[in-house]
Length: 114
Image (cartoon, rainbow, N blue to C red):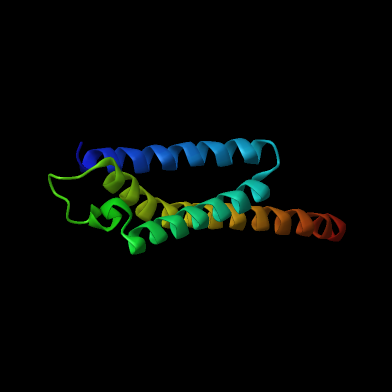
């Protein structure tokens, strides 16, 4: 295995999450999905930091394992890199929900002025 597996894992996770958020948007549940994604990403990040700090199976060695990387190193790397990406994606989804609500509230006011 190489760092390509971490990169492919991150891109795949991002693509799957974007697809899940798009499906939630189509069903009118984007806000709920964004909050769930935020909580899950924060939970994964906390668990990964706990594994890194405790030294679980040398989880903190994912930075410099070079040729001796194990699956724990790869999972730890994805658990360290993916949550900030997913948190920002959930924040963007929350902004989309808020923008849509704001626009829908403003719509009747604009129609009455006309």
